[in-house]
Length: 178
Image (cartoon, rainbow, N blue to C red; front, side, top):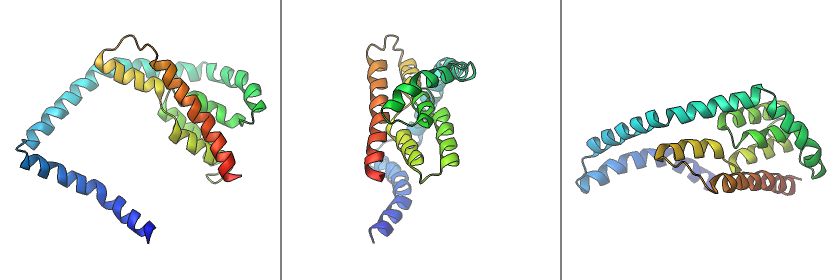
């Protein structure tokens, strides 16, 4: 019964929100269409403004991967992390996730295709993907969009959160699924 209710709710929640926003706007005397067009215009200008930051980030990620630097990092970290029971197959995912969501999704897809989605590695990789974020992408896009040039502690805190998400995912999955 609960699954059926959840399934039906998930089917209808977005259409209901899309219907409610213009209705609420109408009753609040907001020109909904004009506000939408203005927001879309601002979004377009923001996209143009952050494009150089995105291009630089994508080039840096490709250089990191294609130069072999990621393989060097995996080689350096592998013996250390294996002492703590962290599978070597997850190391590229842990390195790539703060850099690129697409790259991390590709690595996760490779793990799922190789080991299966119901394997321990598949479960851990999926949990890592959902528990960590693309720290450098976020800092590049959002800080670039509003002109922040000195991120202060943002990089450290973001990477610390990614590390906690990575290690926490492994710990929780091994406790939960073993």
